[in-house]
Length: 411
Image (cartoon, rainbow, N blue to C red; front, side):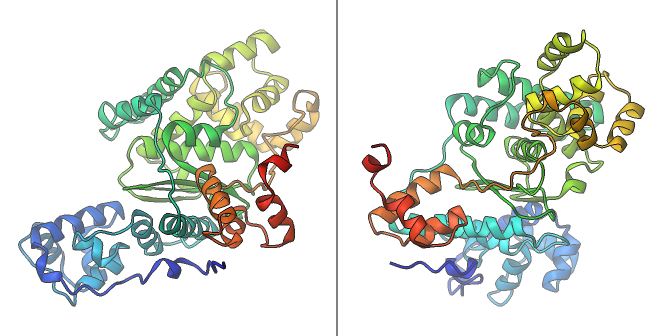
């Protein structure tokens, strides 16, 4: 049974014909238009330009005082990156709805390999959901407690840089407490994110156009990161995007490069603080420094900390500046000297070189991969679905790896 995955068009037409536009109340359509506009970070004027209406007309639409005609609905759907069915409140599979929004997310620099990989994964999930029973993503009780804190007590956007850093640190510390992580390094970070927060994680060598991408909305939660960066860089990207998800960022498509992640924006500073404290807790850093160098920051201790916590030099120095253990001037000098040169001088404490080496690995979300393998073995889907997840050729070697019974694998 073949499954030719040829792009998001396999999920269905982007703009289905709406024959029941008149059945939807203008107030309900307008509310969904307003919600979609905010998710895409569009002003009323910008949306009006895209659909050929004035700002005041958009305001009337969103307030339910102006009806969107059948002819206008496709324009609104195209501009907002949603389906016509969504605007009308008609049922739509979550993966299909998210694929439409992602495909419509065509801002500057946003058409990259991370986005294309996310569309592939949404397509795979949609195929699986139609042919076999898949289990939904779900947070653990500990993960739900973290989400509750983030979306209740930390729901307000920070007003100052200090407040942003304080909120990010608080969320990271609560996460470590609820997940019983202590002050030690995190091991399998993608697995931890999937297990506790119900967010699928995919890693692939996707180039350097974008560090990562986060999708979250009804029934969909996915983080994609490029492994063409160093392992330490990838880990910071994953925790940064997790911060956006936990804090319920109003954008359902968050497509970021390094310049976006380190932008002078309070929301970004908050998730950077979360990522820094989650990956490198202050107690853990001080404990390691006390063991290695009597509490002082030395070149050797920097390399050891990069290795221990699996972070890049830039991320480590960011955290050490927050802790007032290095000055901005010292940080800049070390950045200019270069992480590779630093690690080369102290290679004995960095056997894996996680802070500087890119592994270019491929990791598919465990939930999808497990379902795809079982579906292929039962012939509900073709092996091409598994090949897409693993980014491998659909060949004899993959057939042997996937179709061989478990008893033979462990014999």
